[in-house]
Amino acid sequence: MRILAIVSGEYGQRHVENIRAHGPTDWVVEVWQAPAVLPPVIDYPEDHLPAALPPADLILSFGEHRGIAELLPDIARMTGAQAVVVAVDSEAWLPRGLARQLRGWLRDIGVACVTPKPLCSLTETHYSTGRRQRLEYDDPLIAEFARHFGRPDLRVTVDPQTRAITSAEVVRDSVCGCARHVARGLVGISADDAEQEAGLLHHHYPCLASMGVDLDYGDTLMHVSGNLLKENVGAQVKPFKHVRYVTPRPGA
Image 1 (cartoon, one colour):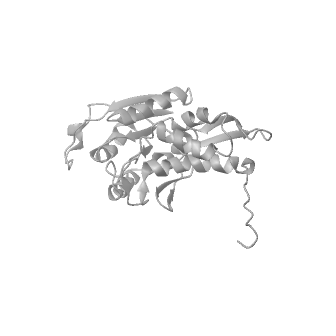
Image 2: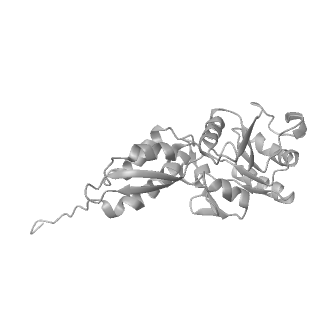
């Protein structure tokens, strides 16, 4: 698969480095550094695009400016891309109204588009846009990417005698590499502490999602992202956790 990643800062660059390091060897990942400054309204996208871009099947947009979204239909035409993933780890980078418009613009030219918020909510069939808000999609290119990167999926093994985690295999990594970092840190941790430890490891990576409260979640996207990892780990260690029973005193 030929991938064009659009970056405008350290956020996107970390994603690209992780994809190149841990993605399938037959993926070819090219990078376009988007302009650092764009006008509030882009009347002529061609004024902000290079003369040529490498051919691509899939575009990954890691832009940290809402104006980059307005360039994506032209970028798709220039590269011949059939699908686009737009990371929304901050509402400021792609407001919900613009996200709807973008999906429509690309649909009109026959290009699939997903706008996962946060990026690590992406799976092979759907993604989140808010609390109890989920959009489904059907595109083989995006699904192929999401098989490897998106909603964290760790396969945790627990020793039933010691109730400690003996291994944590990364089935699907976060795009930024956070899930892989958490997996390494969980080995040796008690099942009782694993869920909390997963959250701490996620926070210390650090997660690159916004720390501002998102109106669609009523929470920070960083917290939402951390909960996805905690839920994945928590469900697997639950059978091994030590259950404490409290017996009330007579007459209490």
